[in-house]
Each structure stands twice: as structure tokens, then as C-alpha cells.
Image (cartoon, rainbow, N blue to C red; front, side):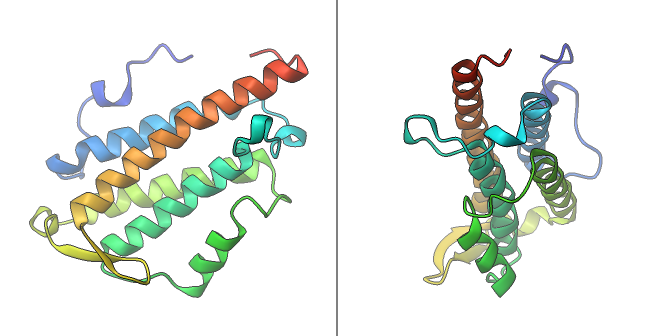
Length: 172
């Protein structure tokens, strides 16, 4: 594991509003942990589901997709067909590699940080509709949930990867 302090202890990120710093820190921490965890993970084990748990591939696809979807809602938009298709394919598109999934997730984190930097703090309490039912949330609710949800899946991914590695005798 890295000897650097956690991201939130490294100081504020330039350009990100003060109220959104914790969101940015959590997303960057997740990215660091995921990239370190998956650095030597074999593609052949990406879709293993020990004890019926979600596969590492699913977690990686899902985290990237959720970031895209939540930031779309935060902008006050609804999902487009490409986003709906991606959602439907999460966990089913097994033709991708660890490297491709990491690249996609990393790109989504970069996009999220850019969008955080473009967010006007005055809009944080504005209501946004989520999903087809347009369930009400707020801009800050969506952005905080993006960090919380991502970190929840980091924990699940960590456990799943360790279980898979131990089952096949892969060094952890």
C-alpha cells in the first residue's frame, strides 16, 4: 500500500469549491486504491463471483457508470440512450480487460473532478430529478452520493478481489 497520506490529508484541490472538496478527495482516494488493488489482477479472473458476490468486473463497470449517471442528474439532465445501454450492459459486457475498465473508471473520475470544479456552490441545494420517476434530490445530495457510493464499492471490490486471489493461490 502507498506510503503517501490519504488524499484528504494532502490539502485542497485547486479549482474545486470548498464544500465539494470532500467529494473530490473521496473520488481520488477511490481511484488510487482501485488502481493499486487491480494493478496485477488477471483478466481471466475478472468475472469470478465467489459466493455469488458481484464480480470485480461488475464493480469497475458499475462505479464508472454511476459516476456518469449521477453527474448527469446533477446537471439537471436525464440519461441518454447511450447511458441507458451502458447501465443495461453492466456486468454483462465481459469482453473487456482490467486495463480497459481501469482506464474507463479513471476517465470518469477525471470528468467528475472537472464537473466539481465547474459547480457553482450557489446551486448545491437546487432540486434535481433522479431517474424516470424524477425522484427529488439536490445537487449536493447527488455529488455526495457519488463519493459515498464509489467508496462503498471500493470496499466490496477489495473483499472480492482478496477472496478470489486467495482461492487461486495468487499472492495478495
